[in-house]
Amino acid sequence: MEIPEKYTELVGTKQQLGGGLFSGKKEMPFEEYDILDLRWGSAKIVDMETLKPKCPTIEYLIKKDGMRASRWTRGFPVPEIELKEWD
Image (cartoon, rainbow, N blue to C red):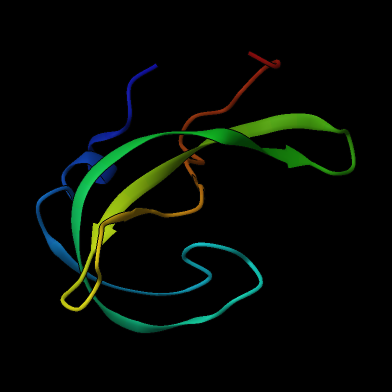
């Protein structure tokens, strides 16, 4: 499975990101981050009515001025790819 181009072309750019970047519990203010890399996430988005997988997730490696080290975000859905069954 290949990551769609609209996600890979964000690597090497600066983007305004905020909200639940690292967890759903803590809201981060919107700030400009460098997107350094991306990878497939280990999570999958699941349809809660049928309990079947809907789509995979990707995670971004991001860094901004003032951050000590870069960090991986939580998984964001890739709805362009539909999963038929669990991997």
